[in-house]
Length: 414
Image (cartoon, rainbow, N blue to C red; front, side, top):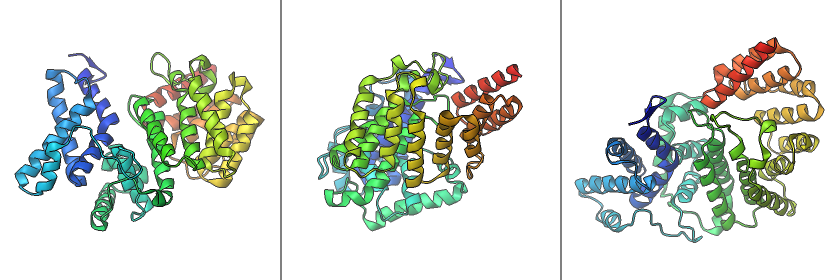
């Protein structure tokens, strides 16, 4: 059995299946059983069984279907042993592997149901996000706790309370009817964007880009667009994801290392996706109700339609970031605007803005951005120090290799 990077090929297949299929398996089991804890436990058992069986039997042709069937069988056995819930047992026994009944909106999609359930207004906003991270992305309680900067036991209690709230309040596991869509749409859009971002720039691990997650987020955004075609922010989100993902083939080199935007081979960008995304941005903005996703999509369209890096309309991008900051102020938006200003007006102007950003001291991209601007200004010793700070905070392997390469460059130049 081939071993690479301390993990067998089969282990890598199981890890990949976990990243891509966890949410789908859990969503299907929740629909089947109505029991969130049972669904997660049976999904975990299915992945554990994969680690035992796949090295011996080979990776199945459809890993997701195999995992769903195995998890369903575990659930069936658990319910049989409990000798309870006859109706639930009957449903499980007769249900096909991945079948799903459409909601009132006519969309047979378990993961979308799960996201809408996690985003029910009965739950506090932070609980919605935490529950989604757990059930849709499969993050551990510890990982979620670190993301929220709270202790793991506190996060565990938060998740327990959220599930209890769903059970006690009788929150239905479905996409809500049309007249109730609006109150949950903003949270759902946020979750789909979060799903995409985890695929676009993995926060840790060996794969810098998880295209499967990006593709799943785009699929969900299309479903949402089908549900609410007249909502300009839904259209804006779909446009944004298409435009961002259009560059995925050029974002890494043959060794799997990240390639900076200005160095990417633009002939490898997906022109069909760029054309579709740009058309959707125009469609959304014509409604005259600009929102954060539409503005971000307009920024992505500026990048996507520039024939060369040198032809990028940085003044327009800086202006759009200014508008985005007015709509949705936050340190990450301010940092991105600083980069755009640096490209439009010079590194010194951008650096002045970066140095005024507060609240991102533990965010590696703040230090990486500062390092890059110092490098462009020829202040190599300061740049090297900033690269070292970024390296100390980065958790993703590809990010660390990119930063280490840049650090080596400024050291050699000095």
